[in-house]
Structure formats: C-alpha cells, structure tokens
Image 1 (tube, rainbow, N blue to C red):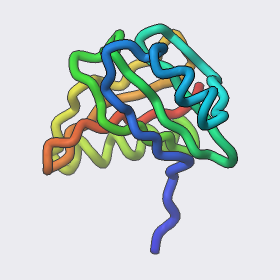
Image 2 (cartoon, rainbow, N blue to C red; image 1 turned 180 degrees about the vertical axis):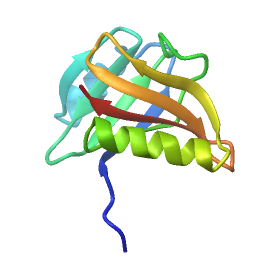
Image 3 (cartoon, one colour; image 1 turned 135 degrees about the vertical axis):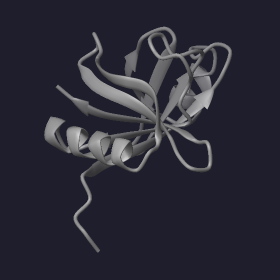
Length: 120
C-alpha cells in the first residue's frame, strides 16, 4: 500500500437549514461546532470524527457529497494533477477560499462529487 496524503474524510449531508439540527448534533450527541458559515456547519466529536451539514455551497457550482482533506498544498496539487491526468471532470477549479482552504471539486467515474482540500 502506498502512503496516502489523506488526513480526514467528512460526509457532507444536504439539508435545508444547517443550523436547525444543532440540538441533535451538539445537544443529544455532544459534538462541538468548530465552524458555522451559515450555509455549512461542521460538527466534530472525539478524534477526527466529523459531519458537515450543507444547504448549498457558497462558491462552487455544485454541492459535494464528501470532503477529503489532504496533508498540505503540495499534496493537493498532486491529487489535482492526477485527477486531470486521469481525465476526471473538475467541477470546481483549484480555488483559495476566504475561510482558509484551497480546494477543488472532482467528479468520480461513478458521478460522486468530491471536495478535495488543504488548509493554507
């Protein structure tokens, strides 16, 4: 097995109102909310367990189903180059977002849109 640049994988759940379920995630399950941008809310538990509730991505043309954080910007560039070389559709180009990440969206061969990111 090769070394993977992946740090974490987070499910992105499509919801109408990302804040509406806060009593479930933070109250009942006891998760923390490390960030809330209005259109996306991240809830985190012990270790690296996380879930994100997304109403509609604020900067990308299409919503992603999962977010994959890689180790650093070099790893992100390698994954992006690999996706392009493989002929995969880049749904959202490499972009520096105002909340401190660089990311791109890629569609897998089965049609799943994946948000691949690294913190800047």
